[in-house]
Length: 428
Image (cartoon, helix red, strand yellow):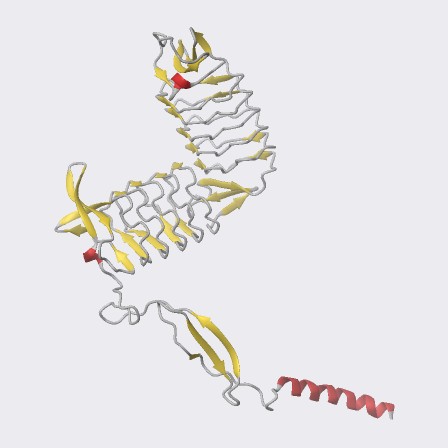
């Protein structure tokens, strides 16, 4: 009897599995195609479901969205907006480098989804996009900027909430993009920097939380403060704990971040041209940093808070050091600025409490406020109540502040440069 029962058991299990594969209505479901009720449009969410073709039971349902769908005339079937509508932009007559043309000054009555800005307006070239021209444009999804445009203004596309793609035409003449030009475009995924633009400005893509594909070029030598602030989805390259933005030919162009801020040593790739804004900020345990020979710039806040870094050799070709770049590097004792440095930005060495000596370049022509704030150990040269930093042969080259305020002493006769707000800067 037990043997007979044992032989029946597998058959019973097989039967149970077969039944489980069938539904309560006694058959295996076969799904229909999607049934739309209601159908989605470009302006409203739809609902769709699939039924069993046998018993009619709903097997799957979901809300869904769809994009624009255009007729032969280029108008959306649903919202009736034109795919392209370049003729209703707002323009203003300008002159750039002696050349007369137009700037796009606003979206006007343009209702385009995919905007291709024309190369000409009224037979003259379109040379620029003005400050705030498309700010908070609510419908613009893609924009192509023509090769004739030489300048894109500050906040030109600021907070364009549905903007997804920005293109520059081949052989673009653009050489400058204004600060915050594409900032807070929360759906922007694809953008590029044209080859004539060598400096990415402050806040250029700040708040573009979906930005993924950013096409750069090898000629970029400067990146402004917060240029990529909160850009969490950018495609990057990692090597030896450092994270880079780059090109197909140089994936290490910009040192973007560090994977672990408890790092004690960092060796950026030799291909790195820019230490990006805040890239190594807060690496309080960093004691060794070797910079590439071809480095062109150190961005704002790049090394801020590297409190254990005792020395830093700057490459001879370095041309720019950004604001607060070395703020609170409290172990730094001395530093030599390369000959190509023409400006010391605001707060660059503020909080460098151990800094005793700084060798200034003769080409220096501007020094921002608070550049040396809190540098209690810095060895200044005195003339009356004035406090100076010198260059070879001139100890009074730079007037930084005064030992008592209000300032009453005239600058030394050999003084050639006065730091911003020196008259209100107290240096005990």
